[in-house]
Structure formats: structure tokens, C-alpha cells
Image 1 (cartoon, chains in turn yellow, green):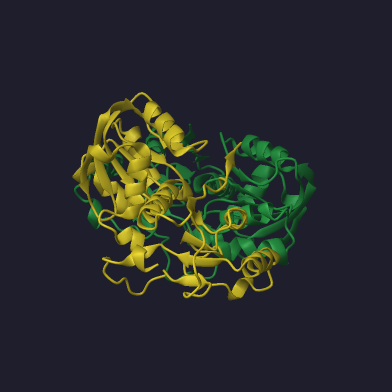
Image 2 (image 1 turned 45 degrees about the vertical axis):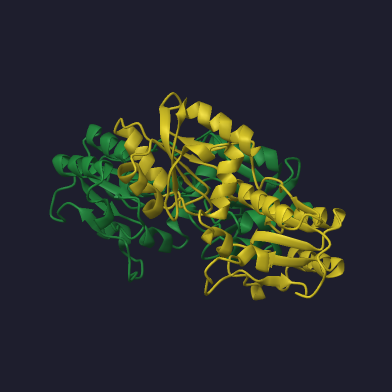
Length: 256
Length: 256
């Protein structure tokens, strides 16, 4: 854990901590993932790992509140697997977002092969100048590069895009995304998740006014999983003898 | 406006108010909509209405904050159309949710033809016992009844569902939705919008544990537009001479 957080200014208060396990236990194998889901837990056990490094919480809550879940059978079965397997779980959220640039953003740019197109890294958003593609081409490219089955798109599919703002996780809010259209002159925002009555309503209005603006929502997990893949790659380099795997979870939704 | 809020306990503080226009102006025609978007404004002008009753805010913000938007060209063009058309805009959010049962929920149940299947109205959720359908059949039924092009689904498409919880708007959070699976023994939750790391992660874990649980996310606008259609129907009955139209907005997203 210290290797993950060294050189990063202390974040306080933070949700990052060892949620399960003993800090003195010898690590035999590591799995990184967007969330320590039931599926990821099973994969970690199968891989012989005894530490999961998870970006989001284990129990459906950012602040790890769980009193309200004590009688829930899904919660109880998951706790049982964690305890029986002896799996250690480290929440790794605030620190990786404080990497410079943000480690989750770095993972996204690596997965897209867009590292060389960065114009500027702002704290919440990275602005890129990419080779011109239409909105439809970018949507297809994102699906292939990120191995996801759908994206939600707003804007004209034939619109050429070259200046792009990316916001991972729950940074698609109006206050964070909307100003980029004017201040950074982006054509397109690619975001993870955000309130639907904010940025999507703005882009719908802009398009209705005849402006060439567009929005692609990847999904929260879809936008942050590449960052946790990058964390696995870094750990593999730092600890060459240690088996480290990134586990890609099943998608939360399919489209009907 | 008084006809909309009479018999409802005063809600304080509230976002509900006349955002534009003069309370003494004679109303010539009314449009109701999920949001007073650029498209809805244009439709209202074309219909000869001079009052829009909108559920969500006009400027991409629940609390109607707009100082940060003053220099934004999309904001400026929208303001110009409102001022030039003389359109009055009444925000109608908190009061309609306080109807007993919630007016937005009533609209949804009417649109689905499910009024007779209600088991219990809780403040945030309505629980129904519907004739058994598979999850895939319900997803198709929702798309047809609500006239929407896609829904996001989690769970086995062949799973039979009969006990269903519905939560409109941004009530799909973990704290509001998850307890219904155990306390109300629902098979399926149909929600508008909610944080993706909460209820969707829970349902993914439940399915991974082999449980018959499912979730359908309609989208925020898609889950509340029927309620504003119902508001239009009520107003038409209360003011028989007054032209009142519900305007269905364009969808915020399409799927690629």
C-alpha cells in the first residue's frame, strides 16, 4: 500500500484504507478492479490472490456505510466469502486520483492510445487534440478500445470532432463539464457518469440551437476500469516477483 | 399555479416558483414538459402557449444557479428566446411529488396501465404485483408504453417477474432502492436514475450469487415525463377552455 501512496500529498479525510485483512500479512498475489464485486472476489480466489485493490467501495456506498445492510442476504453472502477466503481488500480511490496526472486518467489515455494528443491536464478534465474523426467513429473506437458493448451518445453522428474533453468517474456534472465547451472550445465531452438533468440537457439544447457539440457517456465503471488496469501494470513493475492481475468485471447493464 | 398546489402542504424551502413571467398575465395556453428545453420552448411558441410548466430547471441545475453560465452562448440564446417570446415558466417539482400518491408516480402508472396492480405506495417507491412477465417482456413493454428507444437492464432476461418496485426521477440510489429487494420482496426495480456504484453494483452481486433479482434503468426524463403528461390532463379537466399540451422532448441520448 505504501508503494501506491508514496510521493502523494496526504489526503484527509480519505476513503482509502485497508477494509479487510492485516497489514502484516505477506501478499501472495494482487487483483486490481473497479469494484470488489462478487465476481471479482471469485476471480481473485481462483487466481490465488490474497489482496484486492478496489477503486470503489465493497458495499454499494462511497463512504462504506453498511449498518443498513446488516440483514441483507446479498451483503451477508459477500461478507462470508471475504471472511472465508481471508481476502484483504484495500480501497484505492482518493490517492490514485491525486497522481499527477490523475492515475485513472492516465490509464484511460493509455487504453485509448491517446497519450500523445494531450493539450492540457486540468484537475478534473483532460483536454486533447485528436486526429479528426466523426462522432460515430469515436463512439465505435471507444467501444473497441475499452471493450464495452455500448455507449450513450448525444449529438450529430456525422459531426467531425478534434478537440475533446475527458472526465472519468462521476465528473460529468454540469459545473465540471459544461464550461469546457466554451473555455476549452471542445467539440466533444467523453464522461463516465453525471446527473442527467445537467450536462445532457445542456448538450441537447446546444444541438437544438444548431451548434456542433456532442457528449458520450461511457458509464462510471467503464471510465475508471482502465485506470485500475494501469495500477496493476505499475505494481507489476515495482514488484517483479509478485503476481498482479487486473480483473475486468461484467458490465452492470445491457441494452434492450 | 394555485390550482396545482392547493391542498398540498406548503413545501419549504422549495425550488417551485414562477421563474419567468408575471403572475397577473392572462394564460392563453399551457405546455407541460419534463424540462423547459430549447426544443420545448420552440414547441410552446409554435403552439401559441404563453406558460410552460416544467418539472426540472431551465438551466441545467436543480437549484437554478446560473451565475457561472452568464457568458455561455447556449445560455444566452435560450434566455433570448424566453425574453423575446414573453414565455412564462413555472417550475413544478416539489409540489407534484407531494401529491398523495406522488403525481409523477400516478402519471407513470397511468402510462403503463398498471394502476390496478398497486400493492403499496411508499413515499419514494410504489410496489406492484403485476401479472407474471419475463424481464425481457417487461423491458419491451416499458419501451412501447413509454415511447422510448432503449432501457438499461441488469438481470436474467428469462427471469419471471411479478413483484415490482418503481422509483421515478433520481430515486434509484442504494439507500432508496436496495432495501426494497428484502423488505418488499420485489423481483425487479424499475428506476429513473441513480448512482451507478450503488444499486447497479448490488444487483450485479445478487445475480452473481444466483439470486433472481433485476433492475431496469429508464433514464431520469423517461421516468418523469409521464407525470408531466398527467399534470397536463389534470389542468385540461380543471380549465376546460384552456389549451393545455404535454410536449414529449427529444431523448437526451441514443445508443451506439
